Length: 108
Length: 232
Image (cartoon, rainbow over all chains, first blue to last red; front, top):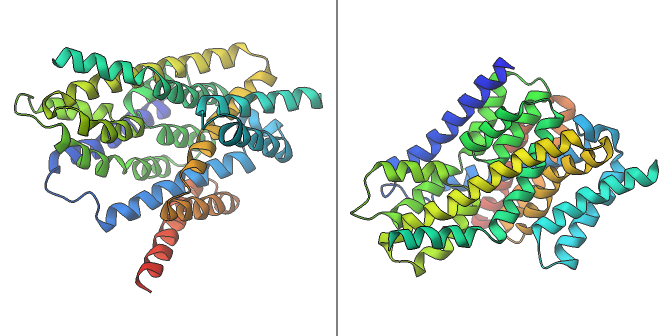
């Protein structure tokens, strides 16, 4: 637990370092440079990699669900988000969560 | 004038932006509860880190028993996007009357939601009141997110395992939907695709480093592919 507290503090400080650095040199550097394009690619790939892993090989309570169940619930979330509602994120996310619970319930 | 801008920003955040954040942070709160993170610590993450991808990475990697250094490096890389974001937004908020510390305070309040809305709204606001609008908007965002974190956490603990599963599932669903909406831009689509393939594969080889490696390998590959096509 102590390690996690330290980890949160350090991650907070280091995340702020990026924000503060941006303030410090704003107006002097072009925010559309190649390095920033690469960083944004890395950030996108990182979160996509994490989400793909959480959906295919989850840890914690999601471990008790099957890949098929998660795939069906994901499809329902996507359907609600893109088809049923006009990109209502709260509705889509809630639909995905509810769908997974219902599928588990139906499966016994 | 400034108070009016503050209220206006808060009002504009109170609709769809707050609902969207709530969806993400409810899932995060539930996920934190499921991974045995304490409630104060989960709230501290939302307030101090204030970057949902970094928070998810932190909780997930920690529960996998990843090395301290691996978690820190991964979070730092995932948060690097704040650098170009503040870099770009700050000149748009500058005004003679603000003291310097205001910009550093505003930087901590910045998130993707606030940044996106600010970029869209600033052209219609006088430069002198933009900072106040931003304060109003981002206070509501961070407040809502903290409440949603707590609510997700407490509700997940109180719920039956079945309902908890659904609540925790909201965390990956949030990004699945947001990222699926971003695929219209080719460089983003390619980065997402490379990362989505690399993430699970690398997890099989090196679970504790997989998020970091997926970002570096997948992101660099996507970057190289786009650049090769532009120049080739």
